[in-house]
Length: 215
Image 1 (cartoon, rainbow, N blue to C red):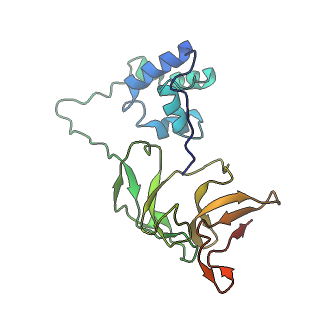
Image 2 (image 1 turned 90 degrees about the vertical axis):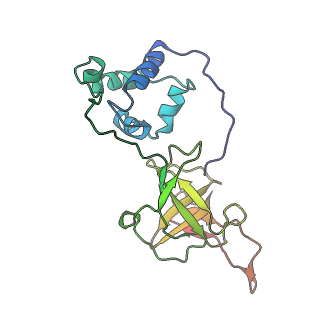
Image 3 (image 1 turned 120 degrees about the vertical axis):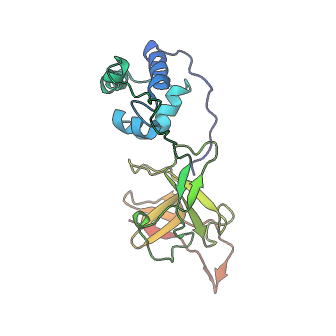
């Protein structure tokens, strides 16, 4: 749901530790770690996309994180752990795509909360560019039209540091509700404004989808 911005394809100077990290990453993926999300968590990155940026040579790895990576993967790097499958081992197939949950996440904030942990995935979403997302939910309601249409699916990524970009659309859990809203800055630093894009529907003399003040 983040705004797209142009990024340079490559960094100007790739440091030696970054090159070594990329080589080891390709050798150890699926052995010492399963994917970018797991590796990012073990190295203390806020997002799996940080690993992607390094692997694509868009940013250098911090030397301390590289040393931590080598420490955690030392046994694999030294060859003391061999995770190659034997000829008799059953093949393991990775499940691709992010899980889709048919739990109502409204655009208007009128549906009762339902815990996603109590639900079962109804499928997998797999499109280029959403590999780092955590799950997908459908949209119900018209308050975010035309940005989000009723019935569409949205790929979501959990924000662990709780930092938001004012003006962007977020899926939020507030009180007993799940909803999609465009979050705007408030005059009060402890508050945000949950804004609805659909400002054309009027009930009486008031907006049908009025802004909400979240504390």
